[in-house]
Image (cartoon, rainbow, N blue to C red; front, side, top):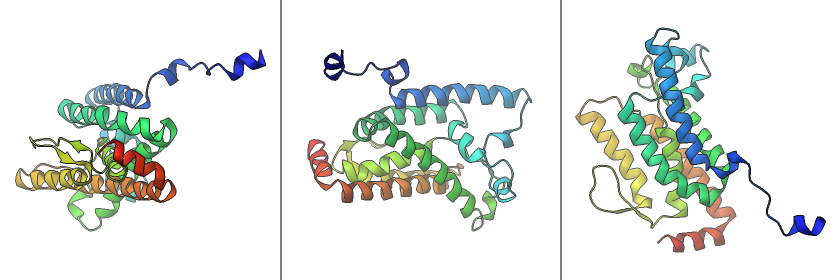
Length: 222
């Protein structure tokens, strides 16, 4: 029996057979539908789900730093983020592993909200604005890939030519900033920056701690 166990792979549970990325997409869709139903029916207030700087600064609804990551402003917002998560997340999860990947996703999402709250002291108009979405977490994932697979060619939204990953993240940030200014659309650019900062820091850490592995990885995706 002991010999059999040594040469036999551990049987995976149902949860382990499905990637964390897919679980996150399922959770995002489910909670978006649930939260939308509860808010539209008047059962709960949006303040209980969405991140509002004035609430956080008053010490109220602190959990929205977490719940806001799993709420979106509409179906297109949800679709765009989940499509991005499917491609970016699947790649990074295979590189980092399930636990590191999940921790990064949540940390980037929460820190993006914290930075948005702090920035409201500089931009008072954001004090009573609501922030929702997985974009901050997504920018965290992209930030790591900037250092692990810098020469991987990817396509950005509205850009018909491939761009290397090391330019894609800052390029996307600038593009969204220009869209928000030009079209006067409330996009959480500060939150995106917060997520990217987390990703960049973690990417630099991985390059310093695992230089040889990162070199091999970089060549593999160049």
